[in-house]
Amino acid sequence: MALNIKIKYFFIILLSIYSLGCNDFSQEKENKSSEILLKVLGTIQDGGIPHMGCSKECCSNYFLSKKSRIGVSSLGVSNLKHNTNYIIDATPNINFQLIDLIGNADPSKKLNGIFLTHAHMGHYAGLLNFGRESLNSKNIPLYLMPKFYNFILNNGPWNQLVELNNIKLNKIYNREKVILHNNLSFTPIQVPHRDEYSETVGYVIEGINKKALYVPDIDKWAKWEVSIVEMIKSVDYAFLDGTFFDEKEINNRDISEIPHPFIIESLKLFKELDESEKSKVYFIHLNHTNPVLNSESSEYKKVISAGFNIAKTGMEFFL
Image (cartoon, rainbow, N blue to C red; front, side, top):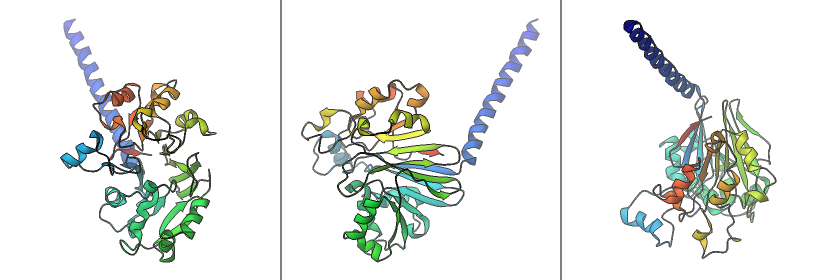
């Protein structure tokens, strides 16, 4: 009797080990078979960190310890099947962000497109690095909305990049899918934001298996005619505007000048999502004052305990 029980437990353990091994192998096989790799290249608001003129603890620690800078918000997308690479936004940190994406390769040969969200400094100022004073690139495709297209075409120094064939402009339109390959597409989705020189868009990046939503800048979720809750449900990953945690960070600024949804507002709006939906959300485009940048802070722990995530440079996702 005892021998039979021992034999029974032996086979149960053996079956469990086998099942675990199969699950691990299946996950590894899925990753290896995925053709689209999305990589977080930066997570900070336009001014970066350390932020110019900031003597607060959030920045002074970086000056004193000589920590590496954290790049301005950007995503890189690599098509592993077709050996092509794309970046969302040309930030002031695009030099080292491209190294993270394509190594030391010449962007003229290995960067197949730049998708711009809007004309605020942290999202397109890096284009200057493609001019003749720096890389002097050749016809790197630039994807942008009509108003932004005209702004680049008719204003210096940006139009010099066009005249010298450093970049090649491609006009895109709200909700019209840009098919790059049979396994990869980008769809711009217009959002309400301060549109002084251009429209503002987020992107849905779609691979063969999964989709990601990227909305780094928006005034307020309630101002958008689209339900952000339903958008989260429709994708597998959602990288969303988390610029400020709450109003305490900007008590020296008029919020109407720099409107963004506070993270605490988003937590309240998203609270009815089930756990699997909450886990899709990664807050990004974080102001240098945002306490969630400190993983030991109560604010960071509040976001994580609520089931959400904070985007970090170097994170990778297969689509």
